[in-house]
Image (cartoon, rainbow, N blue to C red; front, top):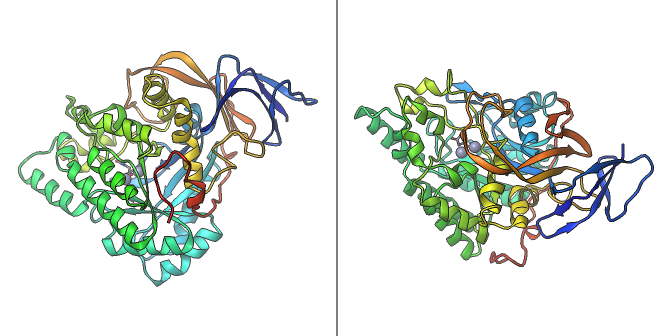
Length: 473
Ligand code: URP
Ligand code: ZN
Ligand code: ZN
């Protein structure tokens, strides 16, 4: 089925212009004016921006964690993502020590295959590096197209890997062309601080934040960045929450280290005081790293604007308030960490970022889509509007005012972290490879229609543009 999108303003990471887009067989085949094609359906985007579909580089769908399993799976999670203007997610595939990586990857294929309504790829968690793991990595990269590995520096006795594992992962990633991602917090010191807090009878949600101070995120970020420089490798720091971590990333980049940073909407608009909400509601706002003192938000916005942080992920990791978050009612360490953000990632960034003049429209596209496509081996198939690219498109009305609420969201959870927030702008229709997934705010997609994406190897040259200070060695 052919389609022509007319009357919209096309926005890419580089340009903003009036133009029409012809879609054939799921691809963009022409961009121009007065386009026509026999049998093409005309889609009117009057008054709207046309963005490349968002790429969410950080999701946890159907993931066992904190004694329970995330509420949103690949069906509800990708439907909500599509409503929010995201057409690709890259989800974290967990692994178990001593088990072949291919078993874990198969588990993630089984979770996603019949359910995803948009395209998806996987990052792979590395919890140990031994001969078996090293032997499997070339296959993971070359055959599965999994070209990014995640190492946790926190969650002691659960996911945490030691420094040797991180360093060896960086070396191996360099050799094979993969990007290493880190959850950067000092898990050992956090373990000490949390035990001490509980011993002292401090069990409320706010102690989650007080036992994970920003210094420990800054320390771990700097450590991972220094290892990266030493290994001459490449690093992507997920969910950067505070000035301490931004400083370390900026320092590493100024030395020419190949270090990138992601933040998340929650760190840009929510703060530590949310953990003190009465009636245990603070549990809804338990993330690791935790929400920070409000002044950090300006630092994060400025880092996005200046390019010291480059992407925004949702870190979608949703748990119901009733029945899941309340596992930690008497002990903050038992509150499952994470929240439901996948649906509001673009809208919050647009409303708080573009509308309030903190970032430009083109930066918005870069941060929500293009940069992730380049970092994670999807560009130019994904992440841009260009002839030959997949027709993953968002028709976005920049003027609609609305209030975010769990009553109207499409995630499976019983609360929304941005409940009551007034925002401007909304995706109206969303196409994945030329087919509507959301049309005029109605879901018209099909579970199982999302395709698994084998991604290309990490390519530093695709990432450096004239606006950036990163020096190529
Ligand atoms: O609290 C968080 N961030 N939950 C998801 C798991 C992770 O650390 O990314
Ligand atoms: Zn994390
Ligand atoms: Zn995460």
